[in-house]
Length: 170
Image (cartoon, rainbow, N blue to C red; front, side, top):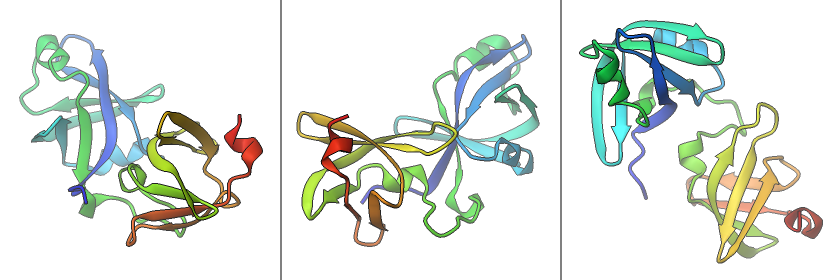
């Protein structure tokens, strides 16, 4: 089982201005939650670096952050592409039938008892999320609805589904 002590809540996609402000694409349902954070962990591959937040604001659909030690545009540009994470203990409480993306990626999906593939991506569309399931050379995109995904068992690392063939052929 993968080490998942962090929850990824954003990705640095650019810079804003010349003073080191970072443009972050929020990967959370509530971008305003960045205001409550004192620090974040920047992730690139296996490398993690905790950094204090010195200022935060929302701008259009993004979050703009000033981080301790990031003083120039060049400093900020060097961080583009990094994921922004927080400790799992700081994550918001989930409702029943809600899951963190990190917990679902890699889970096998059994459709009517037969292995269909593993969840390889989750597209967050603003409405219903779409699970990308990859099995062999086939890839399926299925809306993340309870009528298709009957049980998600994180403890057993398994998803049981009943996805109609017409959905799989889309």
